[in-house]
Image (tube, rainbow, N blue to C red; front, side, top):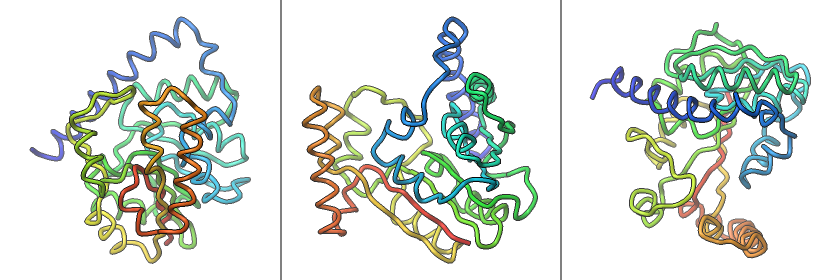
Length: 253
């Protein structure tokens, strides 16, 4: 498998996802309008990860792999100067529609995260959600560092692959929202070491152990209790992070 073949497969997969979603948005464009909380609360790690970005007013931010564009819109609403890109032209189009529907001023382009079309030191912050585990991380990490200004920082939310039972379930168990490409792999210690070799400082926060069961639970109350227990467990026993479902990574240059 060559890098080009991998990128072509990834682009085709996400273009098809965007095409399927576009059917709804052409019929119901009002569905593109959303409140910040709709995005920040859709997964328990998103709001804490956004807080890691700090004050965004007047800050130049790159949305790395913008997908549907909701994060880009939220950052623009918070006063950031947002540039957003995605490998999928279909998703770039959807993100443009969403920005227009929400009256957000964002610069969009189609690009490859392993070959960024930006000058050195272009951005104060970089945001990404479930992107690094799709990439050749050694290449992507160098590009991230190149386009980040000295003193800036990066926040990524990523699936974590340290839990063998969870990895088995990701492969063998059917559940709602399970849509994966054949080339993506949750991050593990090897990928963290790559990031440590490129960036001077790295922080990692884990999310969801017991709360993983929410995919199979109908009771939001029970799911909320499990999330609360997770927060307490991880605070008391940081070593449990290796069993988490997701991590938030903060990288500083």
